[in-house]
Image 1 (cartoon, rainbow, N blue to C red):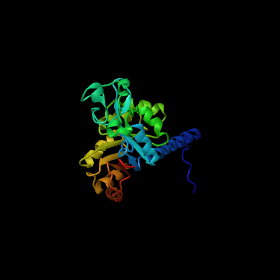
Image 2 (image 1 turned 180 degrees about the vertical axis):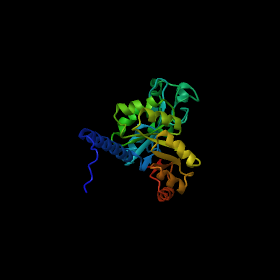
Image 3 (image 1 turned 135 degrees about the vertical axis):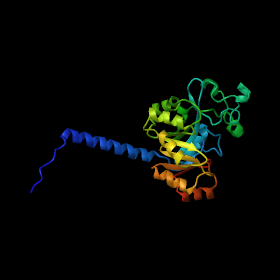
Image 4 (image 1 turned 45 degrees about the horizontal axis):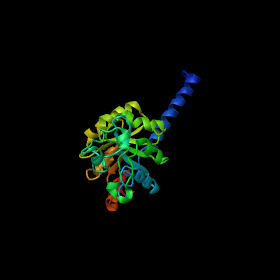
Length: 265
């Protein structure tokens, strides 16, 4: 006895469904391909070059680092630039130009451009300028950036990334998980990472999930093998900072971490 045929989906609807599924699969695969793996150069090749400067980034690219990490602050007039510390004293001559304890977020971009960000690393690096986020991304070219936001609005980071059409190439991370959530709402296809330290328990993982992050970047001395298993169970990548010892790197690789951030790429 033949079964009566059930209702058929109109051809147009079948085509639309196929397109939607294909788009979702493509987005998932593309996102997975952009999650960090391998060696990440910490603030560029910062062991030998002034951190967060173009020469350090260039050296990391020449060293074949899989990803180049650097930090950003937002200048008073909205320009994102590369800097790690809350004040400019350690890595620039800001104390001479603008007084001691000058906040990284207190200057206009034109004032930041006057700083020497290389002399502290040695006379050979004297005169190295502080780069803007846009300049850094332009230098990296085909090498993906891991942008760590230290201070600034989501727009200060998103605008250069969008302008240079790198949303599908670079990743953005932060210790400020609420900020990550705001970025995810504005640009949901951008891969985000949650930075942290301490205990990486289920409560922390639940909080990370709310940010939309696709990877966890954790202090290597705090990460346990069971943490790696739990992160992978969520479908995320997990990496560690900052490791320059090859023996420790091998231990972490054996634990299953996906990427290791180092000053010596």
